[in-house]
Image (cartoon, rainbow, N blue to C red; front, side, top):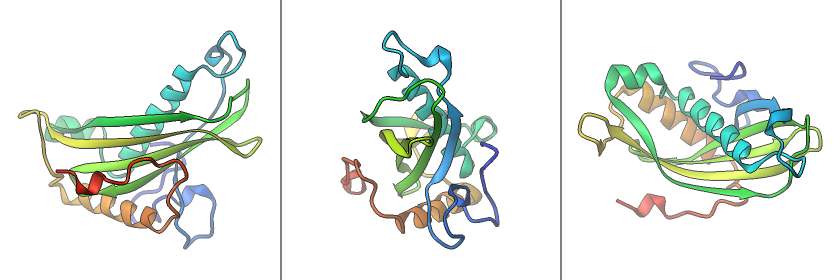
Length: 180
């Protein structure tokens, strides 16, 4: 988890800087466009957008207890089923970045999540990614519900908090809840 994370009795997602009782996305990455992230066009290469989004997704999942120790101890993990990236604006050298992540929905087997990459210096969204991940029993290689109470409770709390946010611009899929 990044150094801005809040878990336990603190309000999840409180690191985004809104009023204390207001729902807000979880800030899952902070950094800047590094020189080695640039391509021949002298802007951030798309592979680094994906890299930042992978960090953001892992950090979000750590908030509700899905991390290496959980995977080793339980033999359960998450696999990503779908990922849709939208590149909206270019990011230039040294731009300060922030990824803001939300859990759109969960049934404790599937997690529909959304991440936005913001240029903090110029206050614009540069890209977004929408994903669907599934909890898997690694011994059986089959989908399985989360059974650990602490993990289920944290994920449910985060999902309920994020459900109070406006639906993010750019979310394409709304039908995950109806799938089996």
